[in-house]
Length: 125
Image (cartoon, rainbow, N blue to C red; front, side, top):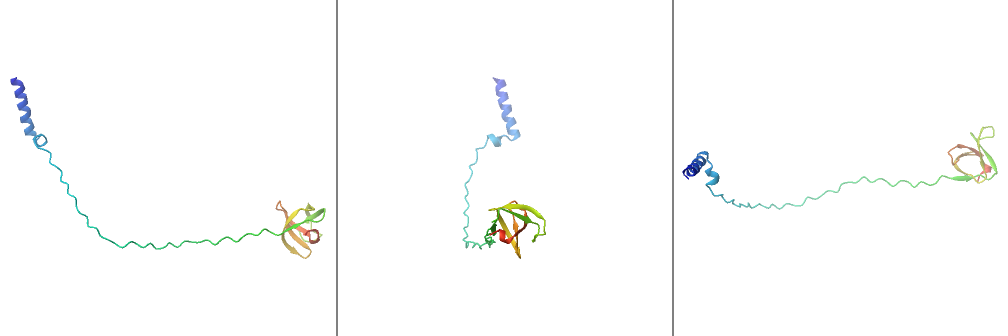
């Protein structure tokens, strides 16, 4: 029993010597709740300036190109206006051609497959 007492006393002395009494010997201090009052400053609301928006103009409506219809059973399309120009293809009655322009008695046309050429004006309507 003497040995146990000596050990306990030694531990207590050691604790005092190391400063452990601050942890074990004191009660925890209560934390003070110090609520600080905030000063409320009233300000005027910020007025938002309207952001100018770039407005794109509406695209011009695209009208379909003028079309002509072949009235003869088989008609040559030439690479220029006139009978002396080379035949590049042939079209049939009822074929639709885009009218690109006119020169005298000849119409500059574009076929549905994209080929461009000239046809005699009296053979289309």
